[in-house]
Amino acid sequence: MYKINPDSRPVLLAVAVGTGLVFLTSFALSFSALHDVAGWANVPFWLAGAVPVMLDVAMVVYSLSALVRRARGERAWFSWTLLGFFTLISLVGNAAHTAGIPEEYRPYVGMVVVALAPVAALAALENLAGLVVANPGARVVPVAEEDVEHSAVVQELRPAEAEELDLLAALASPHPQSKRTPENLATILRMSRRRARVRDIAEAVGMSPTLVKTALRDMAGVGLIKAA
Image (cartoon, rainbow, N blue to C red; front, side, top):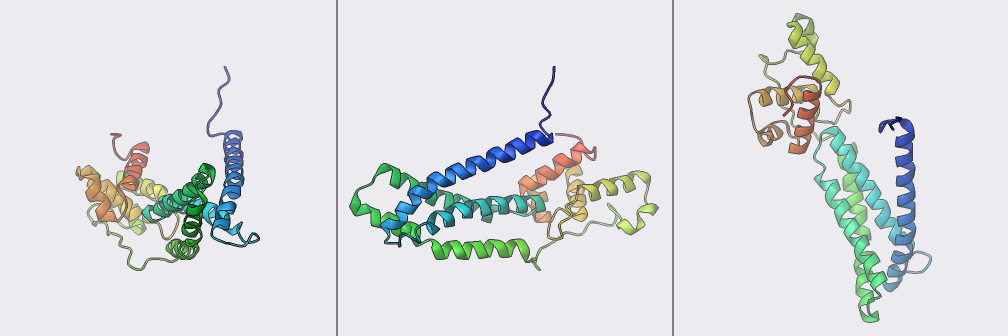
């Protein structure tokens, strides 16, 4: 019996196309409602379309930003918070339009939605800066020499140690700003073998507990530690 490979290119392509159709459909529906809500705040008709674009594009941007931060091993709470906030505002605008609230309340709803324009601009700039500007204060905890030697002297290590170092390097993120470095992964490995709590490990390497758990799961996948 033929079984579908969930990691095959056709499946991933179908998911990508479906995701695009869902977004375009929801954007079209939301555009109509938020366009009218902008009119409640006396926004000119020709400019009212900027309001749904501002909100819906912001949700896409912050979703991708959160994924980028997560892939780098960084905390993504800022992007997730912005995503939740702008999703809530879009939801309120759409719900108010659909519910047909009384005329006297409409200017207040429109005012709240339209007044977010400078907030959206500031949040977008801050989010972008966090992605493209390196943080000089980012703390990377050095690995104790007795645990992992520098990669330049791998040949002097025991075969088991050299293999571990190669595996950690393979699991590390290639992005220069990512905290998922071989050094931090080595610290996670060392502390986990000492049965340290995930919260303590996360604090030591400056990563979120979720990302530390992901790193531990990846290490278990390559045999560095036993699966929980």
